[in-house]
Length: 162
Image (cartoon, rainbow, N blue to C red; front, side):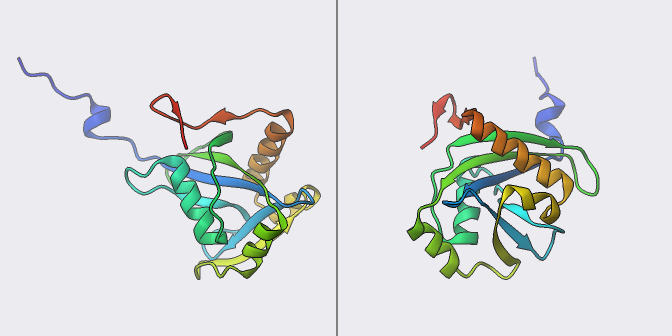
């Protein structure tokens, strides 16, 4: 007897999965990035490659964009985005930590790839003017989760990720 594979395995849905990091400086400002391909400023991050672990995708993007290697093992928010110009997607926001002066200096000296046109620290009161509305709401929700001490551990097959 032959069994056929479920459709989800033979024709998986098109869905984007984004990995972003909320990083603060000593003053509580959020590190944002300006790109050549998206309006407004964004949290650092991007998509994963095929079979790349989610938190390692976020770590790779943060390192490429800032020169920093951060653990990124706690998820502050999961944001579902309906299909608009792009397929539907999910964005995971990881806690990147509060940087110390030596880490802030690394960010200042780092030269990101050409598609990154700006790295900018912004205080919470400025975020609404600098970001698209959906991006701003995602950061606000992540900051609120951080202030409540609420986060989800990043798990790999049920074990906390390193």
